[in-house]
Every structure is written in C-alpha cells, then in structure tokens.
Length: 621
Image (cartoon, rainbow, N blue to C red; front, side, top):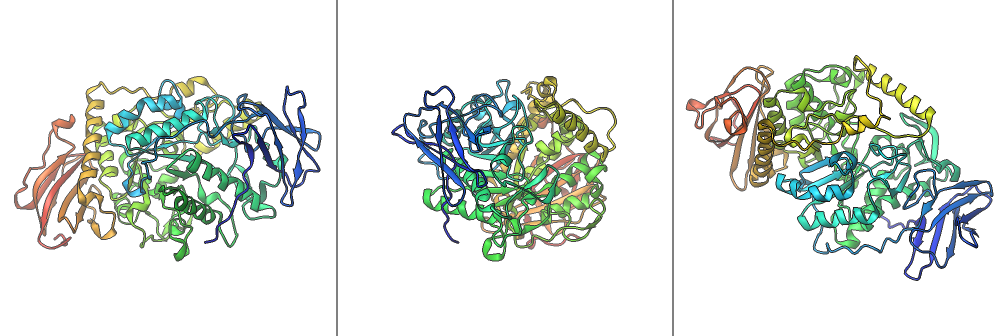
C-alpha cells in the first residue's frame, strides 16, 4: 500500500486570516476568484501542471462569500464549497474548520461487529428537522440500546427538503439542517454517550439541479450508463483529480468531523476498470487515517451485487471494505411476512430463502434469478457474519414503495415482534430504521423541493415508471408537495399499548443480544440453520464454544401453531417468547421446559430457549 497525498480543494482558511482558494479546472484558460461586495473583488488564480488553480488572499473572515469566474464568462460556486448559505445556485461561503473544539479524545471508534445501527433522516426524525433535534433524542436511542446512528446524506441539496441523494456539493452541509458546528456537536455528544456516528455518502452520481461540476472539468464520463445519467469519471483521462476529490471528501467527514464510518451508496455503480479500483484506494486512504489518528473508522458498502469482492481483504483480491448491506436478507424476510411477490420480490417468498440468507447472507449465490433472468451471485464462504448489515426496514425499502408504507402499516402486531426478533437474534449486524422500534405507522415517502420545472416533471414521470414494475395502482404522492414531507415526519407515539409493548420488546432483544455470548459470536461455525419445516418454522442454534452458551431460537412465520421436536438437545429454560402477555401478545403455547423435547410455537412468534446439547449441533431426527 502506497501513501498518496491528495490536494485539498476549496477555501482553506488559516489562523492568520489568510485563505487559500484552490479549484481543479484543467481545460480553462483562466480562472478568477470573485468576492462579491469587496472593494478589490477579483483575484486572478495561478494554474499548476495538474490543472489546479489557486490564490492566497489575506484578510478573509468566516462567512465571506465567493464565486469562481471561468474564462471570464461563467460565474460558478465552488465545487468543494463548505457552505452554500443561499442554496445550490448562490455563492459559496468561507468556513473556519477550527472553530469547534472536540472533547472526545477518549473515543477510539467502534468495530462494525459492536454496532447496533439506527438509520435516520435528519429532516424527518424530529419535529425540528435539524441536527440539534437529533441531539435531543440521543438519550432515547441510548436507552433503546442503540450503539451507532447512521445519518442519511447531508450534502447540500436544492430546496429545503430532500432524501439527500440529490446532493451537488459533497463538502457542504445542507443548510436546512444547521451549521457544520452543529454536526460536530452532534458527533461530540454521541461519543460522550458511547454512540458511534456513521454518515451516508453518495459517490456514484451527483444530483441534477445545481450541479456545475461539468463546467470545471471532466468529472463525468459517457463511457458507462447509470440510472442517474453520466457516470463519475473514475477511470478515464484526467480521472486522478476526480478520484482525489471524492477521497478527500470522505477523509474530511472521518477526520475533521470525527465520523466513525461511512455508508457508501451504491458502490456497484462506481464504474472503474483501473488496476487500483477507487473503492480499494478509498479503503487504503482510510486505513492510513486510522494509523495516523489511532481512531477506528468503518466503511460499509451498499451494493446490488452478491459479490464478496467488495468486503474481502486486499491481500485476498478484495477491495477492503469492512462490511456491506445485505439486501436479500430483507427481501426474503419482507416477502415471507407480507406475501408480496411483485417487482424484485418475485425472486423470493419461500421461508427456505430466508434460511439461506441466515446461512450465507446472500440468497442467490450462483443460481438462476427469475427477476434478473440470469444466474446471479457468489458464495461468501470466507466472510464472517459481522461483515453483513441486515434489516427488516430501511429508507430504500420503505421509501421506494409508492405509498411509503412501513411494516407497522402492513403487518399485524405479532408479526412486527417476529420481524424484530428475526433481525436482532441473527448473527449479522442489525440495523433499525427510525420509528420501527415502536411500530411507526406514518409513511416514509420520497420527497424533494426542486426548483427546476422540467426536472420536476421528469421526476414525477420517472416515479410512475418505477412503480409500474410493482403493478401499483393509484397515483404516487407528489414528491414536491410539502404535505408529502410532513406526512413522513415521525409521530413519536409510544403511548398506545401495542407501541409501548413493541418498544419494550426491542429493548429486551437488544439487551439480550448484547449480553449473551452465543449471540455475540460472529463466526460461521457458531450458527446452525435447521431445515425449514412446512414453509413455516425456521430454527436456529446459536452457540459460543468458549462460554458454553447455547441457544435454540424458533421463528414461526405461519398463522397457525407449529410443533418442533428438539432431537439431540435438551431445552432447559425458556428465555423469551414474543407471544407472551408481557409483550401484549395473545398468550404462549411454548412450555417453559418442554416435555420430551416437543416445542409448540405460537403463530407469528419467536421463542428462545437455553439448551444443553448431547453433541455440538446434533442433527435433528
């Protein structure tokens, strides 16, 4: 691994009040810094051999506004702007990265296997819709048992409300959420409470409105086709500076903002045929940051490919990410719970597929996929369970439904507890989507506030085409409507008996997961998946060999009672049953100490037994 120095772009303010402005524009004949309102408001910039233009200006204060003037004709904001106070089309503003003082020297980061992740959207998480609003709710998340929060993208977007994937200024915090110091305060407060913070970042595309990167240089390429238009130029001519731009951005969040990790959106769309893939280059740069700071940093990839290459170590031919989202675990769980078979759910529906996900993390490991019309996937046989993040809900799987329905609106109450247990008792890293812990019934819809009429029209038409694959009837809510956004803000209704019981159930399961060695064991030999019974009953054995902690876990996905014979082991004590009245259930049929090893499992329920085994992971008869 070779160490590389990345030239920093943007407005870099020093303690003497001098600001170095640097921007990459390799094909421009001249670039001028423009300071609106300044008496001497234009400053010619000098070009180096790599196409970077720069100038050092004295007497600059935080908040100073500026543009770049390209070839004397185009006035544009800074691609590496740290602040866009007037939105995506207005001037950039100088910031002082040293203004905030962290007090988290004691914090050394968190390994992925220690994380219980809570995904949230800043605008919809609290009524305030701000970073300060998140800070106010951190104690509640700590009480729930969460160890890490994952924040949906924060880069500057058009308008006031957006999911974040339309960001066009990767270095600038969306100004509707607060200031950069607010974000640093959030991270600092989280660390004081023992919580890690992960940020979702988007390096596979840039949003359409306010995207002026093409005016500066070859940031994009038409060599590849993506759902969002031209791909980022990671492997063509002049791509070194493009790669540096995004890697510099990742290092800013991890170093300057003390983030503990990044969730990389759609890494399968990082089109790169280079000998050194950009994902590997990013992973190596982050590894060097870890060595320099002594702080653990985690990289989690979202990928539509069942390919362990992204998470395999570099010495084994991989790209070196620490983990990835396991979408197929969700698809198998969701399809079996809801009965949905449309769209990509046509590949799922049988409980045996969820059993495969428990065993391999992927469902498709090389067999034919009806939805994709081809063989798909590879077997991740050498990857520990802790490299995979699983969930019953997330922003994509809820928000990309036409009506944004959560499981709280789709399933009966008993099935919500079953879904929670399936995720939290799995050997994978669990992720909760904001509000699921109490059964939030408000939708999470797709919302935007673009200003370009043509873009708005194209967006609305595109949403209709997207839902055609799911044969959805009716009309999709207007993403531009304020009401669409307001309907998506959490209610925080924890008073109803079902909501209170579900919240208590989540707290119990998270605490149980943290304190049982068998559930903390991420080695593949520590989990055995039994053959599915009647497409209804899924049975796991979890054990920790060192502590001799052994658990038998039964999930009944049917609306009828199921009976299982625990041959080869003796259940000695029931530890949890989601059907119990304590969890507002209908009452349990599973005995505390089953006679002759026959266990009766209530409909739509999960049961945990402590067991002794006649031999380790004995075969059932």
